[in-house]
Image (cartoon, rainbow, N blue to C red; front, side):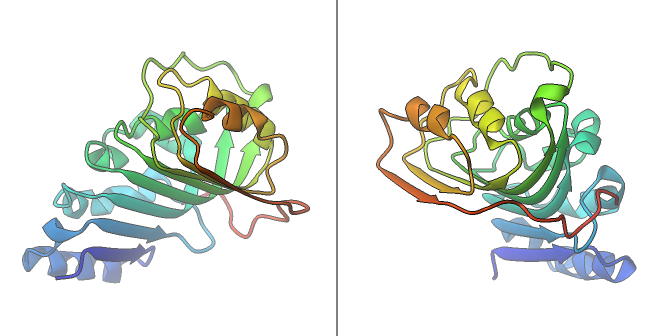
Amino acid sequence: MKSLLKWSKGGSDSLERLAVVDRRGHLQYTRHLVIRMGEHSLVPQSFQPYIPYFRSIDKLQTLVIDGLYVPAFMPLFDGCLGVFAHSLRSLEIKHIWDSGRQLLSFISQFPLLEDLSIQSCYAIYFFLGPSLPALRTSPPFRGCLNLSLIMDSQSLCEAMAQLPGGLHFTSLELKGCGKPEAIITACEFTLRSVSYTWTTGLGKPNFIPTG
């Protein structure tokens, strides 16, 4: 049985396909879930119809989300993506809209994360948002960190370096991230490899932050 499940926003036909897989008892074997939103971004309204099926995936190890609107999820996290929170070890998020420094709060909702990949983050400047309550815990982060094309990457790196649980990554892959020194310093006792690629910028978003 396949342990990889790919889901794209597609209306009732997607629901029907998930229902068939669930009836056959296969969803419980899913370890790697890929959610692609096309030209939209994932919000709770687009996710909620599928939650009864995703609850069957109780041992998910890797989650990939291509198109994520972070602010919409924070008040409703437990009832949506929270179904994966206590098994997930690897999170890859691409084409992200963020505001008010909520991205790190979102990531910290997955307490067992080892590997993290953040790609193409169109942050609405971290330093302009209101202060969030201080995080009391953060994931162990003992695997690989991939940061690629992050708007205001310096602020993100500095904020990550101050997470309460610290950073223990063994591998860093950085692309187009200006001034990542805070991340490198935070991992200096565990870091084994660093890959850095320079690029000129993010370019324009190819999606819109709606469900």
